[in-house]
Image 1: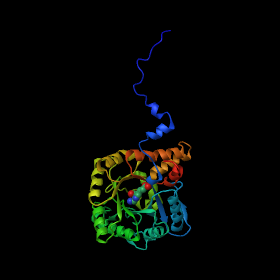
Image 2 (image 1 turned 30 degrees about the vertical axis):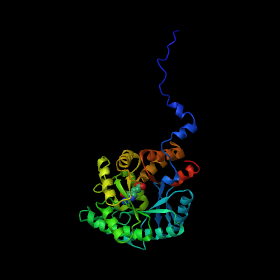
Image 3 (image 1 turned 180 degrees about the horizontal axis):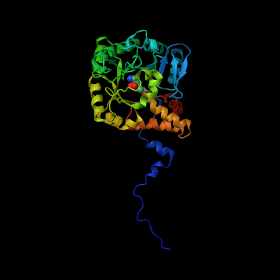
Image 4 (image 1 turned 90 degrees about the vertical axis):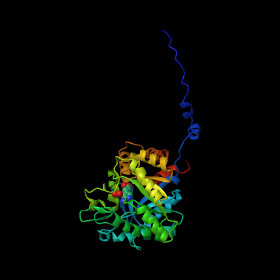
Length: 337
Ligand code: PBG
């Protein structure tokens, strides 16, 4: 039997550094804490009312009294902010989305109540018309069903002002109309609302991963089989995302967002690398739903997979993550970084 010597030992043993927990912790490049998490919530009219969203197991539409309880839990867990989305009753939806700028509407009322009860909690409100339009599109339509840009921006400005006046800390335009960030910023300045932040959904794709969200806010029925490709971005593109994000920053956005999340990590990485501005990512409803389906079947381990999915956003450059897993993740992270 002849002994065959190894030709040489590995010059570097990568496993040395991975061997012990202390050492893995010392060389960890990114960390995930509750500070990174933003919880999206669905608020509806009524009292003591909670309705499940079937395509998003574990997510409920809550009346304001119950939302305040959930928000309190988020604060206790160290989550810095909520993103509010309204479920608008059918009788308040219209072709022109007038309810979107009703100062006594569901979102302004929710903002005021949350700010009174939990002043330290950051509030991000969505600026877009889809929860308020009878047809479920994010804007005002012409006779051919095409979303009119400048006419829609006029309404978005009113909606943004209405949220800012109610006390929203951040307004987050998710409509993808051209020029809306500059117009909203000008109007906020003119109104003396100089501290209202703008988180622009800059790289927002025409994604089919939003299906469960449209069930949750009740815009799916009006939308039917229609899509949003004339204003949201083509999933095939990423140069365009940089263009959009750079424009939004130059128009006065304080932060930008990439959405959806997991299939778009390359876009997140490029935006953060090239612009070096606060960059958020949205792990959207469809991403939540597919994870939950796998957890329910016992195919993936819930807690570890949730944390892994969120850590990977940090590695790719996210400064914060909108995720329906925020409460679960913050509970899991309690006490560790
Ligand atoms: C509305 C809006 C959408 C989402 C956030 N804001 C849906 C859409 O553009 O159709 C999707 C969020 C999610 O899927 O979790 N403009």
